[in-house]
Image (cartoon, rainbow, N blue to C red):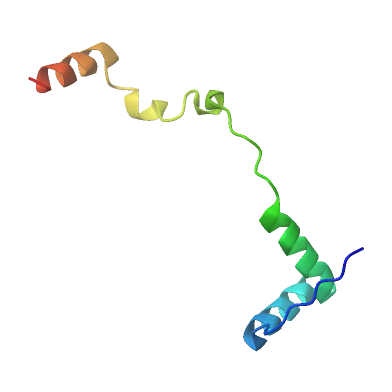
Length: 76
């Protein structure tokens, strides 16, 4: 396993990290590894299919065909 040394680590950041590690019942090194792992984890690719139905509440009382017709008329 690799070793990571960090120079010029701000004292206030170290104190916050130490408190966070204690609250999570981890060592400071363990908390750093956990935070870095989350920070550099690759996000799962999103699918456009996940957007299906998003915002449908806004269109509940609106006739889509009428809305499109009114928008097209406004372009002239």
